[in-house]
Image (cartoon, rainbow, N blue to C red):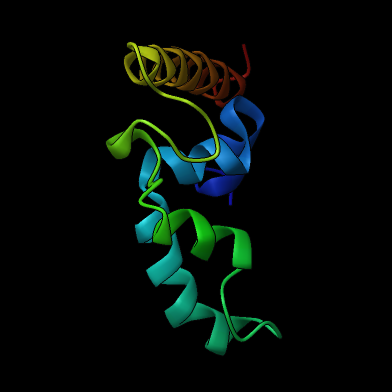
Length: 97
């Protein structure tokens, strides 16, 4: 989990991670994996509701958050900036600096 979702959550959290990845993508992955990996047999209802309403995250300019008026580009830039800061910090820690 070090470089997977656990790496993203301190920066942007699970809801914005889903928005940036596409809520439809998260829904279909959840539909497939929940049956194998979870006691839950279906994705959360809130995810299905947003997908049905075509609120797919950044790609539709609305998901759990509003991405209209350039907020999508701002969110991506902020995420990327924070990822690079964390990677730099991890690299320094691995070198013992």
